[in-house]
Image (tube, rainbow, N blue to C red; front, side, top):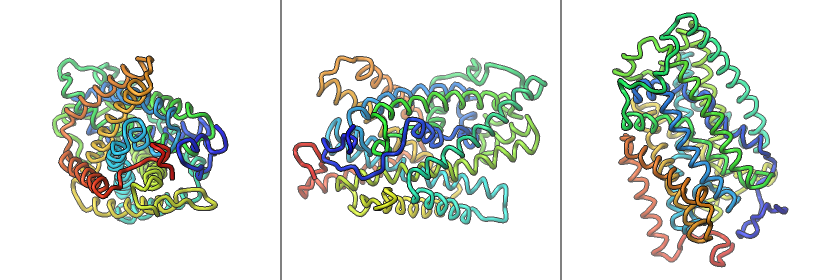
Length: 461
C-alpha cells in the first residue's frame, strides 16, 4: 500500500501507527460486539420476540451480514478512518457524509455511556456498598488510560478479555446443555427458533430492533483502517468473520438459556425490568454460583472490554471528522509518541462520564440510551447501503450486480423494515439530533464553508 497506506491519493498523510493485522481486527470486532452480549438484554429480546429469541438473533445476523458486505465494499474503495462518514461523503457527496457522520455519532458517542451504565448497575448489584457512580468513574479512568497507551496496548488487552469471555460462555453452554439432558427447564425444543402459537413478522422484527444492539460494533473495525497493516480487504474480511462467529454464539447461548427460563410465559407477559432473566436461567442450570459468574462477566465485559474498544472507535471517528474541519480542529491532534488521537480520546471519556452519571439517575436511562444508539446506527447503515450503489453502480459503472446492487438493496430493505417495526422510544430525540445536524450543515453552506473532503474536487489540505 506504500508508506502512507494509499492515503496520499486522498489528500491525507499517515499519522496513526499501522500495527494491526487481520487477527487483531477480528479480535477487536469480537470484543466490540461482546460474545456474551445477550446476557445483558436477554429478557428484553425474549419478551419482545414472544420467546423466539434465537430467530430474532438469526435475522439480526443476516441483516448485519448484508451491512458488513457494504462496509467491505466501501473499505476497499476508501481505506481510511471515519466509517460511514467517510464512505457516504466520498461515495455520494460530502454534505451527505457530514449528516451520516453526525448520525453515527449518536451511536458511537452514546455507546460508551450505555456500556458504562449497564456495567455499573451490574457491579452495584453484586457489591451494593459501592455506588453506581463510583463504578462509572473507575471504568472510564481505566479505559482512558489503556487507550492512551496506544492501539497496541488496546489490542493486547482485547485478546485477554476475549479468551475470558469465551471460557465463561463455554462453561454456561456446557452446563446448560447438561442440565437440559437431565430434565431441567423445558428440555430440548425448537420453540426459541419458531413458535407457531406466537409468531408474526411484526413481532419478530420488533425484537430484532433490540437484538441488533448486540451486533453493533462490527462496524467499529472500519474506524481502524488507518492502523491496519494488511490490505484494505482485511477490513471487510474481519467484519464478516466477526459477525458470523458472534452470530452463531448468540444463537446457541440464547437458545439454551430460553429453554432454561423458569417462567417463560410470565417473562413474555411482564418483561424483564430488572434485567436478570439470563442469570435466573443460569441459576436453573448450575445454581447460584453460575448466576453470579454470568452477572459478573456481563459487568466486566460491558464496562471494560466493550467500552474500551468503543472509546477507541469513537475517538477515531471524531479524529476523521475534525481532520476534515467538520468538527473542531483540536480533535484531530495525534499524540507525538503514542500515535493516538489524544484529544478525541479524552473528549469521549468526558462525555461518557457525564452522560453516564446523568442517566444513572433516571429510571429509563438504559432504555433511552439504547434507543438512541439503535436509531443512530440504523439510519447511518441505511445511507451506507445507498453509498455502495451510488459509488459503484452509478459512478463507476460496476456490473457486479450482487455485491454492488442486489446485496445493498436487500440490506437496506431488511433494516428499513426493522426500523419501521422498532417503535423506538427515543425516535423523537433521534430526529431532533438529525435536525440539529441539518441546521449546522445549512449554516456551513450559507457561510460558504461547504463540507469538503481532502482529495475531492482539488480541495486538498
